[in-house]
Length: 133
Image 1 (cartoon, rainbow, N blue to C red):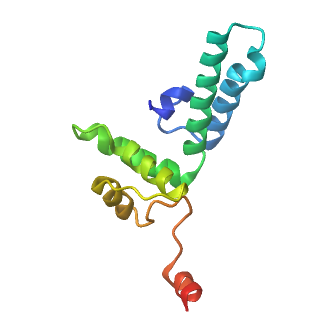
Image 2 (cartoon, rainbow, N blue to C red):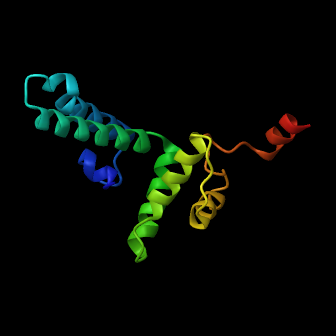
């Protein structure tokens, strides 16, 4: 997966404007439309780098996803396991596609964050009661 900050060439304390500028710089450089005239291998590499920049921007530009990413990044760097963020990410992908993850570490990761793996922000308890009742 790689480090999103490293992908965008940023420090961990980068502002939202820094993230946006770095993304647009890389998106312009690696956009697939800008590489039509080169060979297939160079096009594939540019597309891969473009996707990496887009994924990094999607995570770092959203306050909640960035906080979760930073938390998991710190946790994985302090422990011997390096699968912290990938577990959470795979849980989200499984729930987004309608499937459920059978891994106990995935379900414990999403329950720690209190949102069951959905991408939306958790709702306050009063809001949930209104919807249910």
